[in-house]
Length: 108
Image 1 (cartoon, rainbow, N blue to C red):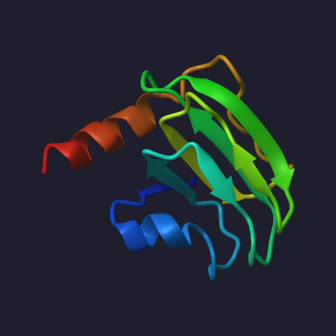
Image 2: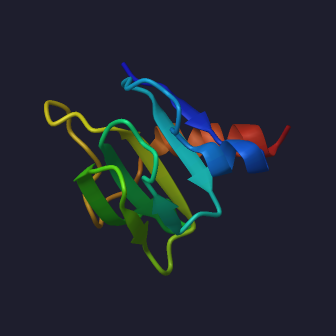
């Protein structure tokens, strides 16, 4: 099962998954509606979420050297591309798992 990490500092947000090895873990970047894959060594699966944690756009197999924007998104979830695993679907909720993690961290 994958875990969800949250990029809470400026440097974590800037770095994203850059300089990491592919894994099943997901990275949540709050306050983000624009990502890039410049310098990445592998492709990503990306889901943009709105303030209500609903998926507003998804992208699979985003190759290195790309930039994706999603006006209206408030956060993004990224992971190493894995075609064998399900990914978020546009119009669905990102799920209680991510909501719980975000709420738990924001109360600290």
